[in-house]
Image 1 (tube, one colour):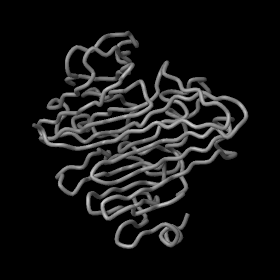
Image 2: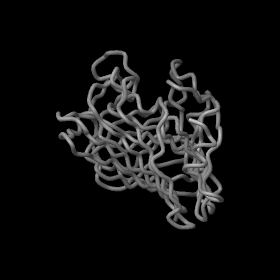
Image 3: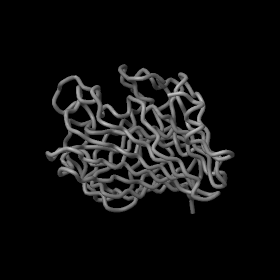
Length: 302
């Protein structure tokens, strides 16, 4: 995938360009009147989104991230598909599926106005993907960069049999300090606590994080808000076609298996993931599609 060919076919002068990023992976650099963004074609992973009026990026990316084929980049918005978490069949397939670990194709790029940029990515079934998952499919990702960031993940079942997926937009949000945030919108929601043997609890009030958190919240209907007191901002997450949200932060006792985070990185991010996870499975009939979407907006604390 040559950079000059990508710029010839999909570059937009003064608005969008392709260049080599970390690990010599192809990156997209977007600059419009509202915001800037960086997206890696490896995983179709958004690594940066920053409205011009904001001092801090929306997203966190670890300085220890891997940038190579077959490995996921730690941070930004990784795409978990067609399963979330460990391989459900215990066949030693990659955690969170395989589409975040390979290169995606570009379908189209468009400057819909001076204020908005739209990019569509595509990941097709292949001989390699068939070794992980045998169902025919086409996966598309639509990214819209403006005064907000919108992400839509569309699964197309191109085969003759129904298949079932779990999935998530595994967003890592940049925060001033993990102990100075609250997550609003989860009050009275039931959740599975994966840090406590997946026992079920119920949230009371806003979520304040002062230890390891690994929770799957069920039946989420309202937008979620990260209130960041140090950065003096709110991140509003409005998702569609989902029932679950995952909140994760590893805490001070970083698992030794996580080598692509620095010891104090837990202070700098929180994952609030929109998805269809755990028992919230999605059945997609033959020759039909399903879309998981999320919109991310930054506002000032009131």
